[in-house]
Image (cartoon, rainbow, N blue to C red):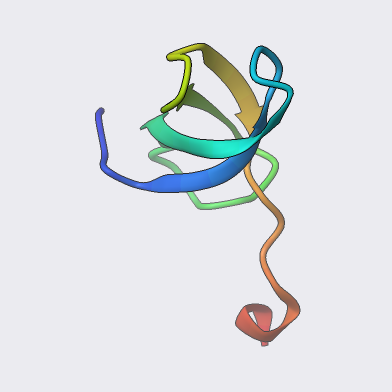
Length: 60
């Protein structure tokens, strides 16, 4: 399931925080610990990482 969501994540190849496309989003209940597939927009490397933690204001 391809989406157009982007997040600033650390890339292991670029060694810096770059924009990443979210390629695979969990279809079940949203939790930040579910692993997603990301692709770096700079070098194109695909990686599987946990989601970012939600901010405290959005939880309440």
